[in-house]
Image 1 (cartoon, chains in turn green, yellow):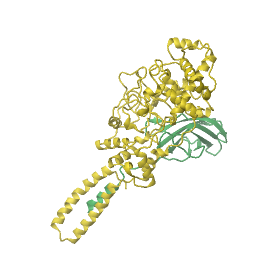
Image 2 (cartoon, rainbow over the protein chains, first blue to last red):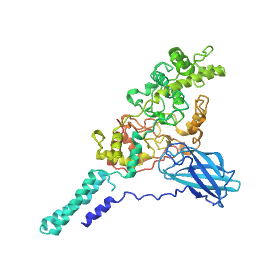
Image 3 (tube, each protein chain N blue to C red):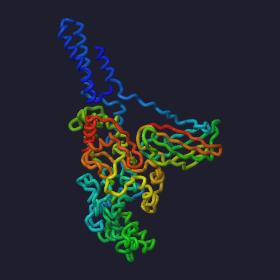
Image 4 (cartoon, rainbow over the protein chains, first blue to last red):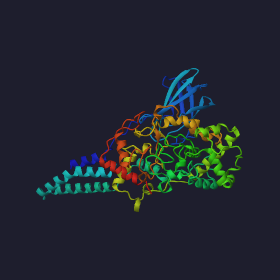
Length: 133
Length: 434
């Protein structure tokens, strides 16, 4: 009987333990603490296999909008040996610390990372966003 | 409960065989023991429930979502191609169909688009490398659903269906002709049809019989002898030939398969009927495809492709010229005068996002090739960009072994797949045919 119970436990156990979920918050502090960045799809939701515009809002640690910044985008899928399927670029300054990042595309489901290299008159810093589709 | 039918049955047998034999022994020696009988009865009932569970495979909610995302019913309507204003013009599609099967669109009158893209063979030819005027370097791709792709050819060296169609026409190994001759031919043979769709043909007085910026030395020299206006006129007719061919090819769509009927039943929570019933092996293959074997990472969506480029360590073919895949295609599509940012595009530049934001210089583009659709894949060996593998079994073995790439880094990692699992994967792939 014990064997039977053990068998049930064995067979109902998941085959692989779930991977640790990455932090997917849309607002994150930059690595050196210079900026607070919010990064969201312009039309609300991230969709697979579509070129999308995203909006990056940059504030200082004290909450002031960051102006005249340039943003370099890189990234990829940490669990696969590949980067982004496109080269997203900053295409517009929208005012009040908001920047349009165009050409964002996710070609498959899973965990993506977008690394935003930010250069502002006050200094440079990097912020990493995790996006899980 | 996660229940992988074949594996599960193995587990059932492995675990319960000993238990049953023990119970049999105890039954033999302790027939009068009521408690023993009761225990046996509970155990047998428990076993019955579990075995029933084995026979009726269950899919988790996540698995059901993935299966639904692969079904043909998830394919969105084809978006208009604003770069080709004739894309959905029936007259253009009809002219395109005529041109597609026209052997006169070649240097020696023996090769048409349909020579390699054969209508009775999923618009491919079953050869390791396509055979036009000469032997090409790449496997002919099927055309079902081709218009959904943002990139064309295995390496994506063109960015629209209509600019793609122009390349084989002048490739010396394919149709090997030249654009001036094609423009003259279209005027002579289809002039009235052409003008009804595209407007007046240019004046051909003073235009050489054969001329192209790509062809033979004589053709190139004839091309450079033409005026800018003449070159533009010929390029315009040439582009329109591509736009007509694209209008036809947009109509070639994938057909519903056994898998789609199975997926529809699963999504509706109904029992699959008739040929939509999957065997235990096919279900195991499907679960591997979307699970442990990681196939659906790249082969995703209703066309089973992410439309992106990956190095998967597929070996080169010994007697073909060096082939570096996507990394060498970037400059070609950038330089193509018929690309989305060129003057032959209809509509606005907002359609050119893929080209504008194309990855241009990453090492992962080395020997990266476009993920092919897997729809109807079992009916078209050999596989890979130069027909490297003769069977689906060889393809599965390649991905399980995951050899290093001869150049660049393969994205695939080695994986333990039992013989049974390999067979199951192939069985599932066969359900992707009508």
